[in-house]
Image 1 (cartoon, rainbow, N blue to C red):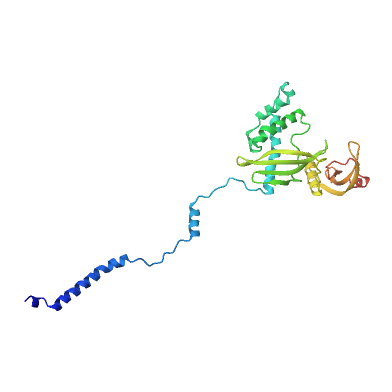
Image 2: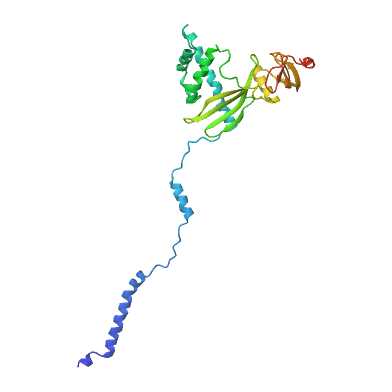
Length: 284
């Protein structure tokens, strides 16, 4: 009876269905456990660097750039303005009879009364060391020697050194009355975020020739005489100097149109020629 109740075919059918159900249940698990074969593309290192760079705040350098000649000229004009301020302040000063005999006292008093704007022109070293000496010497000579050299930046401004921290230029002074002629080296430093004059050096023309060019002399004489200047000649000339000696050297002769007068200078020292050869007198 038991054998008839459980037909072998019926048992096989049950086993088949059971196995089929088991495969269906296992399939999702098998699929989820299999590794993902999708290719992973690595991020380009340069791209990542660019992103990192973009995320970094830009670094702003406080280091000044090397200046152009035009910018250097603006800085060097501060040399002239320092003298202007010193002389303007001196014009407002009053000194007692006792003070007037003591240049060091006069210098200290003037220094105390200089306006704050002087700090936009001169470096700390210039203000604390060089300028007091200049002012004291100026008072000791009663101003006869002038203050700073009367430089001709329009005629010559040769850049000797130009770095982010220091500028040095070479120019010259030609002064007819005392015949003081020489090279002037002016330096400026970058201090407290601005360019400031730090000092100057004088070298006499007898020790270092000026070697004036025609163009430089024309510009200088035009500025000095506030007149149109005509070029007459450049040649070797012999002339008697102030000390009685004779000098033969290259010279440039020009005409000051305003006064209709001739002037000759030796190009090596800038000295004025006292007596021009007669052949030039007809040009007057």
